[in-house]
Amino acid sequence: MPQLSKSLVLSAPTTAAVLPTAAQFELPEKVLQFGTGVLLRGLPDYLIDKANRQGIFNGRIVVVKSTGGGDLDAFTQQDNLYTLAIRGIADEQIVEENVVCSAISRVLSAKTQWAEVLACAANPELTVVISNTTEVGIELVADDVSQSPPVSFPGKLLAFLHARYQAFQGDKAKGLVIVPTELIVDNGTKLEGILLEQAHRNNLDAEFIDWLETANSICNSLVDRIVPGRPDTTMQTTLSEQLGYEDELLTMSEVYTLWAIQGNEHVKSVLSFEQVDAGVIVQPNITLFRELKLRLLNGTHTLSCGLAFLAGANTVREAMENQLLAGFVHNLMLADLLPGIPYAVDEKTGQRFGMQVLDRFRNPYIEHRWLSISLNYSAKLQMRVVPALLHYAKKLEAVPHYVALGFAAYLLFMRGKRQEDGVWYGENNGTEYPIQDDKAGYFADLWSRLEPAELTRTVLHNTSLWGHDLLAIPGFADSVSNYLKHLLAHGAQATVAKALNKTVARQEVAE
Image 1 (cartoon, rainbow, N blue to C red):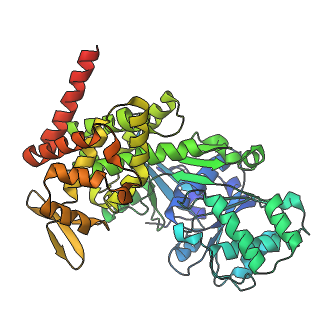
Image 2 (image 1 turned 60 degrees about the vertical axis):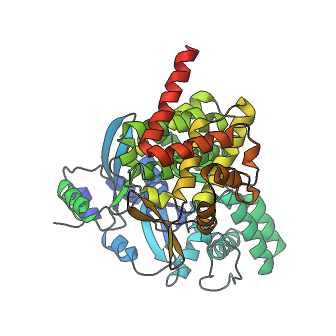
Image 3 (image 1 turned 135 degrees about the horizontal axis):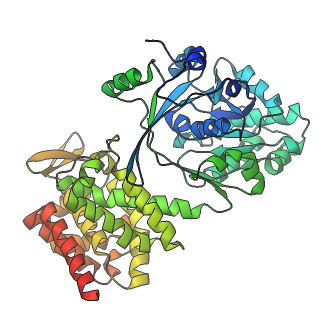
């Protein structure tokens, strides 16, 4: 079977994929990208390719790879082409689409081709820089921007910007729109602060520092798309047979797309690819999108993981195939967490986002394990759920019962029975599971000496855990305690049924 290449796609009369045209290979390089990871291929690079196919952005990407080997060779062998296999559910309909993306023009190694990377700074058509160097990539470290290359990503970017400043003699019209996609809050603001600090530490001239601050737009952004990357062997074989070629860079992604970018009209005009997908949003404030993702997606995951696992579901998809657990997830998200978002959210916007999340949870192509989601359970609850709980209680003067059930399941999940090599293990239906949380020892001690009601009150009163005294929320401790006792006596499935029946009864009374 042939390997994916430029000659193959230009000569293939038919295939099970959307193919690039010859004209797309001739587009100028407009983007410099730090990183070759699957998230970049599955989101920004795909969107730029999509825009190019519609004649809108009309630019290709030079990718900078900081580590040698690996998929660098695959890019070279495949003329920088890769197939994105998009799989999932949208509006309750199965989506299966294959796209051969041609947005990447070159992949350069920072270690061996740094001079070629810097030469790109003199390209007058370059307008955008994108990065995804993992969360630890945007860190301030001791760095020398005259090295070939500098050590850190901010050091490399600063050296590139300095080369551009010199190439165009400080022309402010040649500044760039820089969009980091690393998964940290205010990633652009943090990156800009590091760039300025590094510029001062490297004794770069004041005129350059002024150009850095005033000619460039460094934007906060939020990305949200599950891109598992290379499929398993069985799926790889099936897709290769369907496509009619081998692809060493074949990448799976879900259907859902969100790339929220904080920027003004200038940024929006430069990032013209935002026109081709409703999931790309460029506007001055992106807090709404961060809150929706943090509370409805991440918060629901966190509050559901212990309960779903204790109920016998190993993955998110399995939970969504269980009528009771799917009902809990739906009501938790839309009845409790949505009203609790501590930010002004239009109800229709929140409901639409929530329904999209539910579609994502049902995706039959993605295996997202609840035990993986339970990693750092306590810290995630504190960050993702507690602000919504407090806001709900204050706003509605009521107890969010699905949140209370989620908390009760968390307490039960954290009941460590045995410790080995520093890891505590709980037990569910006779099977042990690891408790991957730095508070596991604290909970094992409480469970060894306290009754459920007292344990509940002790944990909720622990301000070092939550940043607040959750015992002060009227009725919340009693609700959590009652659910915990029911979980212990009757199990997770029966307790979820009890919670859902209570809700039906309340609705009937209201009607």
